[in-house]
Structure formats: C-alpha cells, structure tokens
Image 1: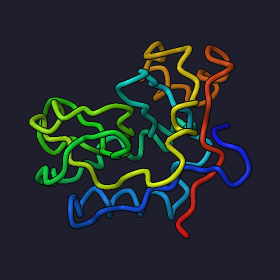
Image 2 (image 1 turned 90 degrees about the vertical axis):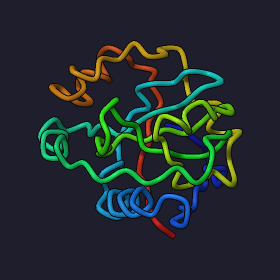
Image 3 (image 1 turned 90 degrees about the horizontal axis):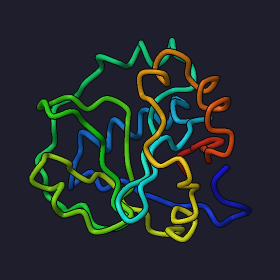
Length: 164
C-alpha cells in the first residue's frame, strides 16, 4: 500500500484547468473505481500511473467510456495529475498519472492536468518502481489484480480513495 498514517497524498481537482477530467475523476472516486488499484507503471522522474480495475469485468465496462479532451491550460509539472490517453483524440477513460518530474513536453500531446498533489509528494516518490513498465495492460484487462499480485507481488497499490 502507499502511504502510512496521515501522510497521504492530497490532490484537489482544478476544474478550471480541465473540467471534463476533474468531473470524470470525481465520479470514478465517488463510485469506488480506484479502490484496490495497483500502480502498474512507475517511471522515476517521469510518471506513476494507475486506473485499470482489479476486476476484469469492470475494466471491460469502462473500456469504451471515453470523454472529450479538455484543452491544455496548465502544464504537466511535478505533482500535476492528468488522464492517460492513446494517440487518438478523445480517447481518455479511467487511467491517470501523476507527473514525477516536469513533463511539459506532454502539454503539446493533449495531456490536460485536472489536479495537483498539494501534500504528500514525498509519499508518491516512494511508490515502488522496481517493476517500471513491465506490467502488461492486456493481461491487466484480462486478469486484473490476480495477474498483478502473482507477477508483481511487491507492487504498491491504493487501498481506497474518498472525497473529503
């Protein structure tokens, strides 16, 4: 798990920067979507990414639930949170990442930050990076947490997320 005690990352959304992304994230959080999710991509100095359900059936339900891109109004600097996407416009669904470095090169690639970690980046920096980008998103989609727990037993994860 990530974090101990009250030292938890906090990330209020910035709907003025990316209102569609902030709205999607809020809805996913309030519906428990991110509970028990693994950080399946951790690249030090770049990003930590999650957003694929541990339950393959839920992943299937959300696979085609794209939303329209927000215009990029803020930069992907350290601590900012954005939705991941394919190279196609309007392809965002549930996967998000926290920028671990200043990734302003992502600004021109339609990655619109919708939130920012305001406390606890020291905790985010400690998320286990030993597996890097080894996890297969195809296997996560097919097998969920069963695959991740078997293949990557030390992978950090989110126990639960809530809106205060």
